Each structure stands twice: as structure tokens, then as C-alpha cells.
Length: 622
Image (cartoon, rainbow, N blue to C red; front, side):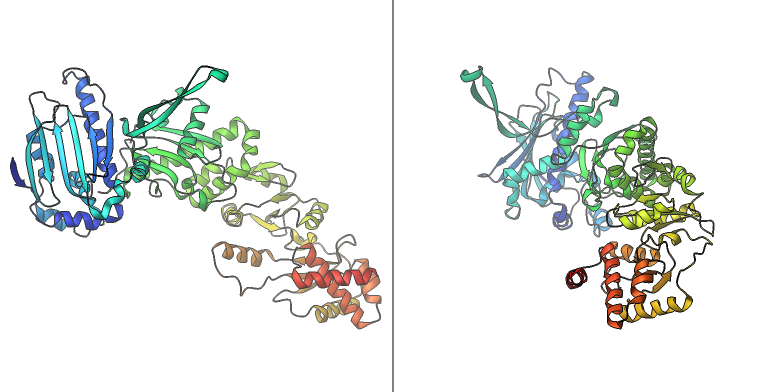
């Protein structure tokens, strides 16, 4: 038996591995199984070239736990190593001197993968590691390499007769979780689910049935528990995949998710290699809950689901898989480094997504419109956050009015600009975020021949502001932000049936009765007699600012729910009733009642105010 020292030549390398990699400890299994896959892939390549004698036989990789012996073993039937190769690959850590290595990486949070250190991740969880291996070359004997977490190792002959490598980890006392089957199954599911070589972890019971009807009997058989799908759908040609297969693969990725709306199959080999399938999920007016559902792979090895550096922010709403050997990873394979390739990949994915959406819109506009309630969140988010996507999405981003009609931005402007252009030549887009609550305001707007859009999406406040900035000549105004005659401000005046003296009298009356409006104002307007006697309006700018600050998580407790009170000086209840009341108290009560009625119309009447309003209504009726 030969002994020696690993050529890093320092007592410090193993403590460094343990210390700096502790937060990523679990990836040791990914590294070791990936090495086994590499060894298996190499022997298959050599066999195709005729360099391996005889049949390859079973190439399944096996992971096994022995709780009594406190060992975790990863076994492959790959290319194996000779005595010289063991010395070369296991002992000389990338032929680097200790000083250079430690100096370069002493401040790194993660060092696995650099200089072939993936194998050494085993020492994060093991006190001792044994490598028992035999080369595919028939004239080479078995070799056993042993190391106990320091630079000293031993090499001895092994009785191993079959090709391949067994890596035996003697699990340390602080890592006994890796002796639990459930924990290993969890890690294999996470990191190795789509590795290109079959991986076995124990056995499972498979039930088949013999006979029919009452004579039918169940037969239970123990079979290998193969934990991975070596031929995932994204590696296949899109032309050979059915819709049912795409749906089934989505269920494999997200067993609890609702069926996706549609998907994009990515497949490019120049100027970089990238494959994958991205699904458009049903967002259900929710954003944050949907993020981090894209899994990144490198040659079918799971890397991360934190892909912000690869795809623009809005594309993190998609679900699915991206696989690329060309995405640069740092030494832990877990964090991405921005470079020109990543920027190209980002542009490519953005372009493909925009092309897919535009294609769906052009090919079947009606079907696209039917999906807009779910696709719209994604498209609007993309236009807000990515300039290149905005430019492409203008062709298929839709606005929906209360009649259920859909228009592109260009189409809608053409529809309303004649009737809804104000005195400053701005086209006013009227909208509601709650058609039921704003019903009377909507009807008043329609009475003027105006069209009203429905904007009830979680990001519509931001989207409206974005469109206003981009288009320049349009402005969004909610239907309750002013009286209907003034939603689109034009140089038009209406006569009041009241004299100037009577108007002042009504204003004084309401000012005294209502008191402090918390920044709001009382306005008197000669509206149509069919309009309400008193209306609540919420100025667009103030209301929108408050809503956007609330969306950003800011404390809005100190900001009042500001509203203006508009008194219709042409309404019979003002002209014929209020002014003709003799009692000052009755006039004040009636003014307050009309104000409460207006607040009720805006769903602003709550608690004690609502109780008082009901009591007053009963009093009036009796």
C-alpha cells in the first residue's frame, strides 16, 4: 500500500472546504452523481468508437445508504480509473500549489467545481472517503484510494473486478441527515431528476393485476427505483412532441399546478447552445407567488431556480426549464456571472417569447383575447420592465372595454380620439377598476357617448402611467375622478337654474353641515337634472399616488382618503327641496344625508356612519 500527500500540500484545504461551503453542503451529492454520469458518458463514447471490448451491459448509477455502517455510496459502471489516473485526478488538485490556491480563494464564499474540486465536496459531509475503482482497460487492476479529510491519503490494490467506480462516504456525526433515505431521495429529486444516465436508489413496489373481474388478483413486485428521467422532453425535437406530452411534462415539473396556457420550445445551437421549454402559467392576477419556477440545468444537471441573471425580470413569471452548457457559472455552479453570452441568451429568450405571443395574436385573435385576462399580467409586466419587449408588445397588448371588446393601443386611440379629446388635445382614456361599484359613474360617462375601459389588474396603476409616458398624447382618468361633464375637459359651460345668490347659499349650507373634508373641496356645478344631487369625486392624481404607494408597501395611515363633494345645482332635491326647507337643522341634516348617499355610492360608508345613515333613512320614510 502506497501513501502520500495530496499536492495542495496544506493542512488547511479541508477546513476551508467545510467552512466556505457549509451553506451549500447538500450539493455534494449533485457533484458526485454528476461525476458518475460523466464517467458513464465517457465509457459509452469509447464503446461507440470500438475502444471498449465486449458489451457495455447495464450502466445504471446506484446510490445506496447503509445506516449501520454510516456510509453513503455512489456507484457507477463508467470509465473507471487506473492507478496512475487515481494519482493524477484525486491527488493533484489541478496541479495547483497550496499558496496560489488558498490566496486566490480564501475570500470566496464557494469553491466547489474549481480545479476539479467537485469531488472534494464529499469532505463537507464525510470524515473519510474511499474510492474503489477499476479502469475499463482490461490490463488494469482495481485500485482503492482512502483519505480521512486531510492531505494524507493511501492507495492500495483492490479486489474490484468490474469496470467503474464506487465512492464510499463515511458520514460525519454532524451530517447524519444524509443517512436518511427521505433526505437522499429529496436531493436526488432536486438535483438529478433529468440526468442522462439512469440512477437507482433502492427499490419500490410495483403492482400489476392478473385475471379479470372477480378473479382479478394483485401481484406486487419489487423493482428498481429509478429516480430520474434520462430523456426529458426539452431534449427532443419539437416537431415530434404532441400537446399531450407538453402538458404531461408540465405536470412532471409542477404536479400541483393548473394546466398552462401555452408554451415555447427553445432550441438554438448558434451563437450559443440552449434548449428548454417555457410555459405560460395561469397567473390569476398574482405576481410574486409565480416567480422562481424556471429551473436552470447545465447538460441536464440541475443548477438553480434563481435565474434573474439569465432572463429579464418579467420572464421569471414563466415556468419551465432552460438547459445550456454555455451559461457561465462560478465555482459552485450556483450563481451566474454576467457576460456577453448571458446577454445574448437574455435577448434571445425575450425575442422568442414576443414572437410566440405575436404569432398567437395574429393566428387566432379571438383565442388570444379569451386568454388575455391571464396573459395580460405577463405582457404588461414585460412592457413595464423591458424596453425591447415593450417595442414588440405594442402590436399585441390589448385594452378591454366594458362591452367586452378588445383593442390594441393603436386601435383604441383611433376609436376614441374624436369624442374623447380634451381642450389640450390629449386623448382621455376613461376606465374603472370596479364596474359594479362605479355603475352610476359609468352610466353618466356613457350618457356623454364616452367609452369606458376595465382596468382591474394588480399592476394596472403602473401600466397606465407607463402608457401615458410612452404615448405622450393620452391620459387615463377613472370615471369617478370628476363629474361626467368634466372627465374630458372641454370649453363648455352649462347654465344653473339657481341665481348666484342661491348658489352661494347652498355652498355655505354644505360647508357648515359637512365640516372638514380632509383636504377635499365642495364644488357646485350645474349638471343635468338626471345626474345625482350630490356626487363624490376622487381626484385622479392624488388617488393614483396613494394607490401606488400602498402597492409599494408604504404606510398610508397618515394620508386621508381625500375626496371632493360636487353639488348638482340643477337637481330637484337641491332646487325644490333643500332651499325651501325652513329649519336650519333640517337643511343641515338633509345636506349630510345627501353626502352620505353619495358616499354609499362610492362604497365609502362603513360602520357607525352606515348605521346612522340607515336610521336617518327610516326616519325620513316615516
